[in-house]
Length: 292
Image (cartoon, rainbow, N blue to C red):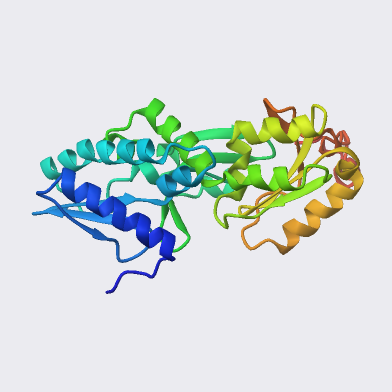
C-alpha cells in the first residue's frame, strides 16, 4: 500500500524527521506510515509508530522554537525504540505518547466500553466524562487503559501531562479564532471532528473566554466535534438552551443538550439547567407513590 498523500508542508516536515531519526538511530528502518501523518519504525521483530501531528502543530504555533521541539521529539523516541526492541509487540499495540488526547463522552456511553474501568478519566458536569485516548489515522480514536500506558513507560502523572499538552496543542486554533473576532458574543469551534469538545479540558481556553465575558462564559457541547462559547448578550440562557437542543438534535455524535458555565477555573452546570424537581410527579401522586 502506498503512503496516504500529505500536503506539501506536512510531507516536507515528515522528510525532515525521517532524516533526523535515520541519522540518530541508524540501525532502525524509518519510513512514512502507510496511513496518517506518522513514521513507522522497524528493526527485526520490533515495530513502532511515531505520530507527527502534535509535533507539527507545536512547531507551527506562533513563537514556537521549532528546532528545540524537533530535538525533544527525536531524543524522546530513543527510550521507546529501546523498549520496543527489548519486548517486540505488534505495531500499534502500545500507545504512542505523542498521540494521547483527552476525549469527551457521556458517562453512560463510556460505561458500555469493555475496558471502562481501566481508563483514566476526569469528571465533567452534565453527565460527561473525559478519558485518555489515542488519536489514530482516519479520524479514529481508541481509549488507552492504564495498563497499556504502563507498557509505554507512562505512569498516571505522565499520562495526564502528555494528554493535557497534546490536547492543548491539537486544539490551539481557538486562539486565532478569538483573536480575529474579539468582539463577538458567540464563537463556534469545530476544528476537530473528534476532539473539539475537549476544549473543556484546556484551561487557557476557559480563562480566555471567561475574561471576555468579564468573569464568566457559557459553553455548549452538543457534539464531540463542536463547542460553542457565549458571553454577554450572546449568553442569554433562554435562547441558548434552544440553540443547544437544536444542535444536539442535529449532532452526528451527540454529547449533551445542556448549558455549562465557566469562571475560567472550573466548570459547572449552568443555573438555567438546574430546575428544581417536583416532589411528586402527577402519575406517581395518583398512585400514591413517592419519588424514587
